[in-house]
Length: 278
Image (cartoon, rainbow, N blue to C red; front, side):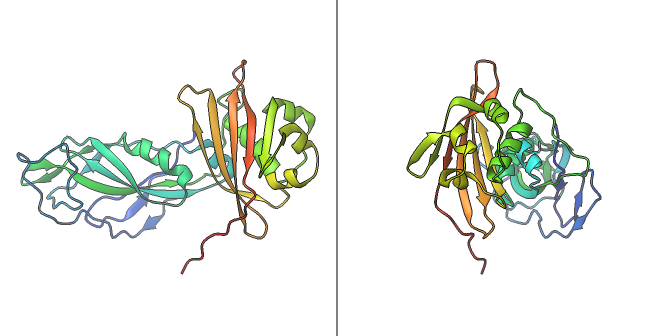
């Protein structure tokens, strides 16, 4: 399974250094553990997070790090980005809480949180005693030249996204692929219209065009599985050739043979525009 590169910021203005497989790149950082008076270790309430800034004599040291798993669909779609997290490190060096403070793409957020929770630290020291602090560091998701995604299920994330990409790009879908990826009763809902998904993808028309036309790209997506691993929802944002954004949701279920197959495809007919940066 492909893992993302990781960059760690330590306190006291140490530069960020890439630790991934790609060539190292350096960035200047102004992040540090700054100064607010912390309660003494004997009186501190360990059930509450520390102040935003705590003075330390010795900064926390990473003992165990965990590289985040690169989201399969993001890897296949070629999406890269960086997620900054803030972690509460307690007096034992354990991670008590993780918060997202900035993200290039929400697709990576959960992978960053899951990885950050598995870090272990040598705790920060103040007056010769360990103290709880917040530390901030980024996870960098960057695809290497030789990266590939291996199938992990009868209908893998790899092949599922390839099918979805072809639909969004307006490509013709042959009957064999429709039978492989769609449940027999799969439906397409576009605006107020409901129609068999196989029929929509086999013909040209308004509903087919709403799902995708040549020139469209997938700009963002998010997928989540049910607790029992029997269903999955895929939310995608697509961008047309004029820069308009479209939102779609795809419901995927496991059939009796354990194969992932699409049952519903919902498409919002509204066209949105990206906010203008001031």
